Length: 248
Length: 312
Image (cartoon, rainbow over all chains, first blue to last red; front, side, top):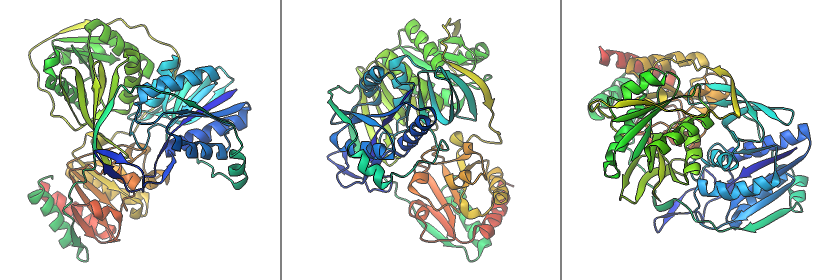
């Protein structure tokens, strides 16, 4: 069996973002392996540990992605394919390029993050599935293989959840609760440096252009009351919400 | 031609469907609007939708899978010749619209706040970077986009249209074995105009009775932080934040919530934010319009009483 994780590198949520010339400038930000992709990587490693075979990470993005790819290798993934592309390419267009690599690898299944912390997009996993004519299961919290032909998975819907049986190969996207990702160990990090990382330059033309990015922080009123007299403070707050903000 | 995929609960259109129709009407220069109702009991819902749209397709495909929805929406696109497809920015829609956009070789604008057209392309604004950045995206036609819930006025009925049955080949691949229903009490979190959220600082699952009581008094939905959900105090469906739901109500009331970035990603665009926390340095106060620094166990009962008095 072969298991693939598709990953991205994104700014740490705690990093301060800047805007330069109408675009987000990431030069000062700490870049990390996307947290939701980390769940995907962990799940792929667990599936390999349980069922044997091979694990691969595939990523599409600029040179700097290598750091996130090495993190996945340090966690235990066997090898990596990096489609090197600078600039913004929308998830639908990326899916086409990624699907080509995945098709050639012919995996049992593919896992990726449910939403990327830079794009705030949920389309990548389903679009890869469409490009391969495979089924997709979004927001997966549990997965169990039934041989190499089917998987039973639990995933979140907008309201509630459901258990599905899916024909393999298929694409799964991750959700909180799927697993608790391991930290890379020092020997893991040393080993990762020698693992195969194949770089393939690609050029694609994005269907979607980002015209302008801005950071619009709402000016907040910051009217903070002292709660030493809870009854007085509560009444004052309810009055403000009713009479000043007019929201209740 | 514009196609609107109408979300429904098997009986009526959801609020999001009426928002999506409004979005379509804003793009009237691109031609007439058709609707499609996909799923179960579609005829009844399509009859309702026909009060809003001249043509409504009904595609009876059974319970949801992304594959079926993409297939049915694509059949409606082919039948109507639509160059723009609009759906609600729900989690399910954001899965199948990706499949549809790929199949149509269309640009996809996800979870847009507002949309416009220059007749060649669609321009949409949306949030990115964990809800911290507002970006304007543009894609040439054909375009598929989803409309973020609670961003658009609800459409009003306009005359009476016709309903047509749409035959759809049902794709295999995913078989639904079991539905785990969510306990539904009161107002839906993403559609609510008031949200009351409790954090770990409440101390126990029992303390959420007070959160529910305040929510009831205000006609609000109950939210929870990730820590609370991880601790098993509240169901995942109530989680607000990066890996939970994103809400932007008129007022978001955060009780004993510290306000981590991941939580803020789910609520920082609320019109007003209210915080009650005993720690005056908690990050939530930096984004709060109103707040009380105090013990939630004393402030919450007082808030309930004041809210009830207001509603009397």
